Length: 178
Image (cartoon, rainbow, N blue to C red; front, side):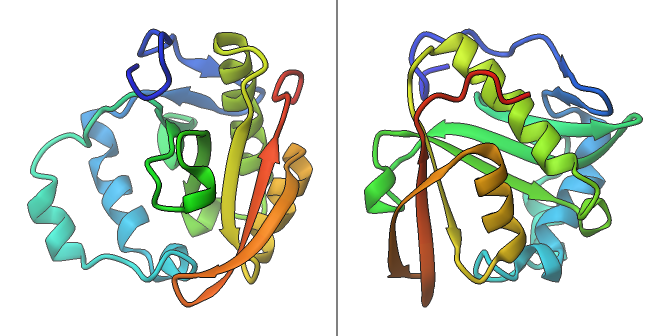
Protein backbone atom coordinates (compact mmCIF):
# COMPACT_ATOMS: atom_id res chain seq x y z
CA UNK A 1 0.00 0.00 0.00
CA UNK A 2 1.85 3.08 -1.16
CA UNK A 3 -0.52 5.53 0.54
CA UNK A 4 0.23 4.10 3.96
CA UNK A 5 3.85 3.08 3.54
CA UNK A 6 4.93 -0.50 3.95
CA UNK A 7 1.52 -1.96 4.82
CA UNK A 8 0.83 -5.03 2.67
CA UNK A 9 -2.46 -4.95 0.82
CA UNK A 10 -4.95 -6.48 0.78
CA UNK A 11 -5.21 -7.82 4.31
CA UNK A 12 -7.21 -10.92 5.09
CA UNK A 13 -10.89 -10.09 5.62
CA UNK A 14 -11.50 -8.59 9.06
CA UNK A 15 -14.42 -10.09 10.98
CA UNK A 16 -16.30 -8.38 13.78
CA UNK A 17 -19.30 -9.62 15.75
CA UNK A 18 -21.69 -8.83 12.86
CA UNK A 19 -19.60 -7.61 9.93
CA UNK A 20 -16.78 -8.46 7.56
CA UNK A 21 -14.41 -5.81 6.17
CA UNK A 22 -13.06 -6.95 2.81
CA UNK A 23 -11.93 -5.85 -0.63
CA UNK A 24 -14.56 -4.82 -3.21
CA UNK A 25 -15.97 -7.58 -5.41
CA UNK A 26 -18.07 -7.58 -8.60
CA UNK A 27 -21.20 -8.33 -6.54
CA UNK A 28 -20.80 -4.94 -4.77
CA UNK A 29 -21.30 -2.86 -7.94
CA UNK A 30 -25.03 -2.13 -7.50
CA UNK A 31 -24.60 -1.25 -3.80
CA UNK A 32 -21.63 1.05 -4.51
CA UNK A 33 -23.69 2.87 -7.15
CA UNK A 34 -26.63 3.11 -4.73
CA UNK A 35 -24.32 4.48 -2.04
CA UNK A 36 -22.80 7.19 -4.24
CA UNK A 37 -26.14 8.11 -5.86
CA UNK A 38 -28.03 8.36 -2.55
CA UNK A 39 -29.26 11.89 -1.79
CA UNK A 40 -29.16 11.08 1.95
CA UNK A 41 -25.53 9.95 1.79
CA UNK A 42 -24.59 12.95 -0.34
CA UNK A 43 -26.14 15.50 2.03
CA UNK A 44 -22.84 16.32 3.76
CA UNK A 45 -20.58 15.52 0.81
CA UNK A 46 -21.60 18.18 -1.66
CA UNK A 47 -24.47 16.16 -3.10
CA UNK A 48 -25.03 12.76 -4.63
CA UNK A 49 -23.69 11.71 -8.02
CA UNK A 50 -26.02 11.05 -10.95
CA UNK A 51 -26.81 7.34 -11.21
CA UNK A 52 -26.37 7.21 -15.00
CA UNK A 53 -22.91 8.77 -14.67
CA UNK A 54 -21.93 6.19 -12.04
CA UNK A 55 -23.26 3.37 -14.24
CA UNK A 56 -21.04 4.57 -17.11
CA UNK A 57 -17.96 5.07 -14.93
CA UNK A 58 -18.26 1.64 -13.31
CA UNK A 59 -18.95 -0.83 -16.12
CA UNK A 60 -17.69 -3.80 -14.08
CA UNK A 61 -16.56 -4.46 -10.53
CA UNK A 62 -15.88 -1.52 -8.20
CA UNK A 63 -12.24 -0.52 -8.24
CA UNK A 64 -9.94 -2.06 -5.68
CA UNK A 65 -7.45 0.24 -4.07
CA UNK A 66 -5.28 0.16 -0.99
CA UNK A 67 -7.09 1.36 2.11
CA UNK A 68 -10.64 0.71 0.82
CA UNK A 69 -12.72 -1.76 2.80
CA UNK A 70 -16.21 -2.89 1.85
CA UNK A 71 -18.38 -3.37 4.93
CA UNK A 72 -20.32 -6.60 4.46
CA UNK A 73 -23.36 -7.68 6.50
CA UNK A 74 -24.55 -11.23 5.83
CA UNK A 75 -22.98 -11.26 2.36
CA UNK A 76 -24.21 -7.83 1.24
CA UNK A 77 -22.36 -4.53 1.11
CA UNK A 78 -23.79 -1.91 3.50
CA UNK A 79 -20.97 0.61 3.37
CA UNK A 80 -17.33 1.35 2.84
CA UNK A 81 -14.43 2.57 4.95
CA UNK A 82 -11.25 4.19 3.71
CA UNK A 83 -7.93 4.62 5.45
CA UNK A 84 -5.68 6.58 3.14
CA UNK A 85 -2.91 9.12 3.25
CA UNK A 86 -4.68 12.47 2.90
CA UNK A 87 -3.70 14.26 -0.29
CA UNK A 88 -4.37 17.79 0.89
CA UNK A 89 -8.05 18.15 -0.04
CA UNK A 90 -8.25 19.40 3.53
CA UNK A 91 -5.15 21.43 4.39
CA UNK A 92 -5.02 20.23 8.01
CA UNK A 93 -4.98 16.56 6.99
CA UNK A 94 -2.22 16.70 4.35
CA UNK A 95 0.09 13.72 4.70
CA UNK A 96 -1.83 12.16 7.61
CA UNK A 97 -3.70 8.87 7.64
CA UNK A 98 -7.36 9.83 7.21
CA UNK A 99 -10.44 7.78 8.09
CA UNK A 100 -13.48 8.05 5.83
CA UNK A 101 -16.78 6.16 5.88
CA UNK A 102 -20.01 5.97 3.91
CA UNK A 103 -22.97 3.72 4.73
CA UNK A 104 -26.26 3.06 2.98
CA UNK A 105 -29.12 4.87 4.77
CA UNK A 106 -30.81 1.58 5.70
CA UNK A 107 -27.69 0.72 7.75
CA UNK A 108 -27.78 3.96 9.75
CA UNK A 109 -28.57 3.84 13.47
CA UNK A 110 -27.60 0.18 13.95
CA UNK A 111 -24.06 0.67 15.26
CA UNK A 112 -22.49 -0.79 12.10
CA UNK A 113 -20.35 2.27 11.39
CA UNK A 114 -18.84 2.28 14.89
CA UNK A 115 -18.20 -1.47 14.76
CA UNK A 116 -16.62 -1.36 11.30
CA UNK A 117 -14.54 1.79 11.91
CA UNK A 118 -13.22 0.42 15.22
CA UNK A 119 -12.16 -2.79 13.46
CA UNK A 120 -10.45 -0.86 10.65
CA UNK A 121 -8.67 1.39 13.16
CA UNK A 122 -7.54 -1.63 15.19
CA UNK A 123 -6.14 -3.18 11.99
CA UNK A 124 -4.39 0.10 11.16
CA UNK A 125 -2.87 0.36 14.65
CA UNK A 126 -1.50 -3.15 14.28
CA UNK A 127 0.07 -2.29 10.92
CA UNK A 128 1.39 1.19 11.81
CA UNK A 129 1.62 1.35 15.63
CA UNK A 130 1.47 4.81 17.14
CA UNK A 131 0.61 6.61 13.90
CA UNK A 132 -2.20 9.14 14.37
CA UNK A 133 -5.36 9.09 12.26
CA UNK A 134 -7.40 12.17 11.34
CA UNK A 135 -11.03 12.66 10.43
CA UNK A 136 -12.97 15.61 9.03
CA UNK A 137 -16.73 16.02 8.92
CA UNK A 138 -19.30 18.78 8.73
CA UNK A 139 -20.42 19.95 12.17
CA UNK A 140 -24.03 19.72 10.94
CA UNK A 141 -23.57 15.96 10.39
CA UNK A 142 -24.65 15.01 13.89
CA UNK A 143 -24.33 11.24 13.31
CA UNK A 144 -20.75 11.60 12.06
CA UNK A 145 -19.84 13.88 14.97
CA UNK A 146 -21.19 11.27 17.43
CA UNK A 147 -19.26 8.52 15.67
CA UNK A 148 -16.02 10.52 15.81
CA UNK A 149 -16.46 11.03 19.56
CA UNK A 150 -17.33 7.36 20.13
CA UNK A 151 -14.17 6.31 18.26
CA UNK A 152 -12.05 8.62 20.43
CA UNK A 153 -11.25 11.42 17.99
CA UNK A 154 -10.37 14.70 19.71
CA UNK A 155 -11.24 18.03 18.12
CA UNK A 156 -8.24 19.90 16.77
CA UNK A 157 -10.08 22.74 15.08
CA UNK A 158 -13.13 23.90 13.19
CA UNK A 159 -12.98 25.71 9.88
CA UNK A 160 -15.10 26.78 6.93
CA UNK A 161 -14.82 24.76 3.72
CA UNK A 162 -17.18 23.49 1.05
CA UNK A 163 -19.65 26.16 2.15
CA UNK A 164 -20.08 24.72 5.65
CA UNK A 165 -18.42 24.54 9.06
CA UNK A 166 -16.07 21.54 9.22
CA UNK A 167 -14.81 19.65 12.25
CA UNK A 168 -11.28 18.25 12.21
CA UNK A 169 -10.18 15.68 14.77
CA UNK A 170 -7.22 13.44 15.53
CA UNK A 171 -6.98 10.00 17.07
CA UNK A 172 -3.53 9.65 18.59
CA UNK A 173 -3.57 5.97 19.48
CA UNK A 174 -6.12 3.86 17.58
CA UNK A 175 -5.20 0.60 19.35
CA UNK A 176 -7.80 -1.15 21.45
CA UNK A 177 -10.95 0.39 19.98
CA UNK A 178 -12.74 -2.81 19.05
